[in-house]
Length: 200
Image (tube, rainbow, N blue to C red):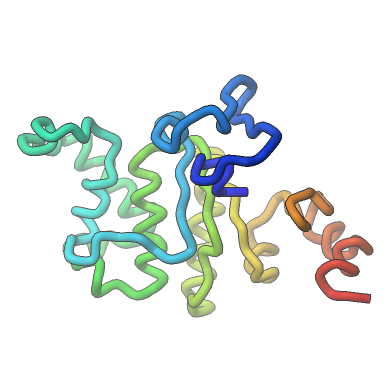
């Protein structure tokens, strides 16, 4: 699903709309990203030899052509934006630490921060708590719920305790189709979900 939404995979049939008019299946990955859709993969993708601050700077939504990039200087407004994101992801104290030395959870938060630097309307987050400690999972839940109202966030996750802690609306997919949708309680007690995922 996320591959189709972000243009990585082209469906054989059907359409995927962002808003009322943008048919994502007719757009390139770059156009989809520019339209305001950001994606975080399960395995964090950061620049390990760069500091946390530099990772956020590199991810900033700016002109990435060669000459502007070579001579670019951060403005006060851009520094403020990086500081704001550092606060949001809880990595103010690690701002000068190389990403390679962050814990697994901190790398996940940094990548979410890198997405936030692009000011997306929609964040697609794939299994953000895989491999995390319980403390890191709690902090990730707090981070994602804190984005509500500023961004739309779609999370694909198999850890039901984590889903319960963040979800307003739960959608269960089975073989590419929506099997059930609603609040956590109604989805968990849905006979179709029980049959498909738990067996009779």
